Length: 182
Image 1 (spheres, one colour):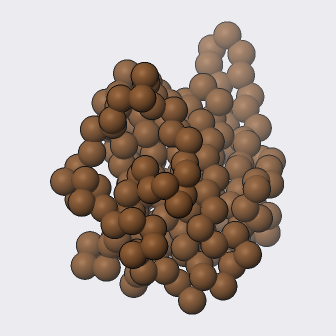
Image 2 (spheres, rainbow, N blue to C red; image 1 turned 90 degrees about the vertical axis):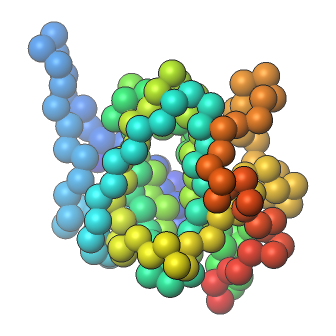
């Protein structure tokens, strides 16, 4: 596996080594000792798997308690994945990083604790899997508006059409009103 730095130093792209031939392929997607040495010294406690249709946008979410770091990847389809730094003391506070993740490119993204996270489905369907460093805690979850002007995220929306959002995300806070981490 290879670690690729991003414009936000704590957010990392992980590119697996893929071994393939006419029969298919094999790749290692996670190895605890390698991850701790090369990316972050964390423990993962929960794995999640979601399936979404084209045009669905999930996020931008984070938890104020039981803060989660997430190792994310796509196993079917393609998404535009975004991380937003919510750590006030960070030099990259309020900055975002976005990348296309797909079953084809097999890239993973490490989104550390202290970041809001979301994704937009660009293919017909996408299956998204992620490992979390803490358990889901709905009582402390925050949703920020995906289109907050202060964040200026350039989502690849088809013809500028508004994405399909959950009620929670529809009622998301603007970045300035959202709680952040010290």
